[in-house]
Every structure is written in structure tokens, then in C-alpha cells.
Length: 271
Image (cartoon, rainbow, N blue to C red; front, side):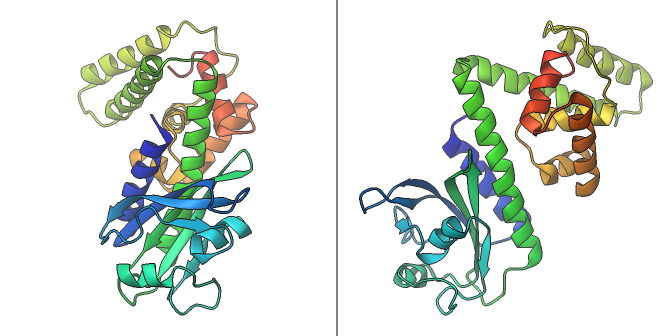
């Protein structure tokens, strides 16, 4: 899956969950000034007249440029009047009819690769829930991009990447279905199928033992899902999901989610 596709998927979730009228993103690339970077706006989900499309936002200017320079999410309740950013792009924002706006950087290997935005066409302020959703999606996107790049660096073909993603997704869905069916015979058959999927990976005997929930959250983490998305899929609280991920990482001796997923796969705990 390309990084552009991952970005668009993240924007769709931002708009669906937060309710912003426009979610958009820019990838960090070479700017108009030689040797400098810029955020090129090229992905949009929601209501737009097209004024933002293709705009190159210089680092340090506008909201996206400030987000990159300070290396953290930023929110403004009125883009056109706030004193907290430069106003080089006011005409474009005004053409779009945007007011309140938040943005979050996507950072991979300590370098910014993209900026996610959520914006409103009304006078309503950006609430804490919207801000949290945007920040969480940015963090989840970082994990997804890292996973995609590591897989590509390992020399796996695109067909094998897609097959592994489908296998992991099928494994995760089957485990969730197993917990929801009332028929014990069917539940046992689903359990047998999930065990078969693990047998097919041909890994060594596991050195650790994970609980069912820990395997569930790792399977979803392997798909690049953040804590909020994992919690939504499993029907549990975000903090609970975070706790399961942390417990699984501790058992596997991993310092990152990606390391935990790789370790679990090596030991046959994930497909």
C-alpha cells in the first residue's frame, strides 16, 4: 500500500470520527527556495472549492509550516485572525471559507514527511476531541509508513505484502468473530481456522505466551492501526487497548510496536 493511500485513509477516518467539514494533507517535499522544504497540499476529503490543491506551504509559514517548525500539533480558532501564525496564505484560506483549523505533523525517522489538517467552515472552535483524533491519526500514520518502508526495504514484492496484509486481516477478523458467535461448535471451528493460519507461517515454537487480547491488539497493530482504531475494532476503551499493547511489547522484549509485531511473527504468534 502506497504512502499516499495511507494518508487518504487517515483523512477519511479524521473526517468520519471528528466531523470536520474538510480533512486534508500535504506531503513534505523540496520547496520553491533551493535547499528548503515545503508542505505540498495534495490530498483532500470533504468540502473544498479547490483553492488549496497544489499549494506549497513553506516551513515556518501558515499553520502547516508552523507545525513542521515546532514539531507538534497546533490549533487555531480563526485562521485569518490568529496572531500565532504568519498570514501568507490568507487569500487561499478565505477562498475556501475556512475558519477554525488544526494540524499535526507526521514524523518518521525524526523527519517530517507529511502534515494532516482538520478544518471547519463555521465559527465553531476546534474541540479537544477533534484535536485528539487528528493527533492520534498522525501517530498511527507514522507507524503505518514505518511498517510499509521496512517491508519494502526487506525486498518483499508488492504481491507478498498484500497477501500478508490480507492474511493478518483475516486472522484478526476471525478472532473477533469467534468471540461474538453463540454457537460453540462454530466458535471451535473458527478457533481451529485461526490456529491453522499460524501453523502456515512455519515459525519456531514461541518463547513467550500472549493472551488472546494481546494477540488481538498485535494483529491490528500489524495492520498499522493506532490505539484509537484498535479500541474501536475490539469494542474496548483506548486506555485498555494501550495497556494490552504495552503488555504484549513487554512480554516480547520490544521497544516499539513494529518490533513487537516482527518478534510475534517470528515466533508464530501472528501470521
